[in-house]
Amino acid sequence: MKRGKLEIIKDILAIIQNSRSIKLTPLLRKSNLSSKSFYEYFNELKEKELIKEIKDRKNKKIIITEKGLDYLNKYKNIIGFIEEFDL
Image 1 (cartoon, helix red, strand yellow):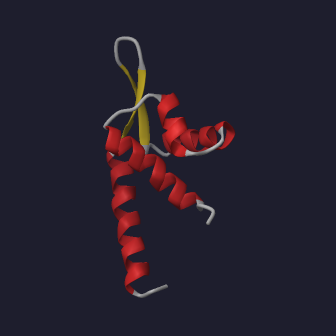
Image 2: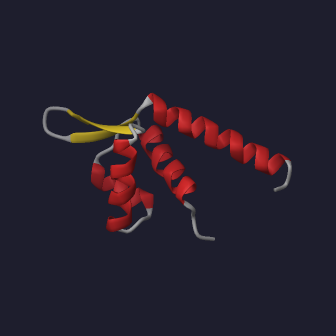
């Protein structure tokens, strides 16, 4: 079954959350998206402040923001509701 936009966003945010911080290339690989699709989602998530890039001494890493964590929690609640009512 093909993933929808909301599920893809959830997957990207969950990867970042589980890693605490992650470099761009491993995030791209783990997202299981084409480069083009990945960068469209990545840029949208940055613009909407669900994720942000931080720089340490030599690398850029991606972290999830409070807004991103809120998205994950609300997504889980919606999925739970759908499953509870068998929708």
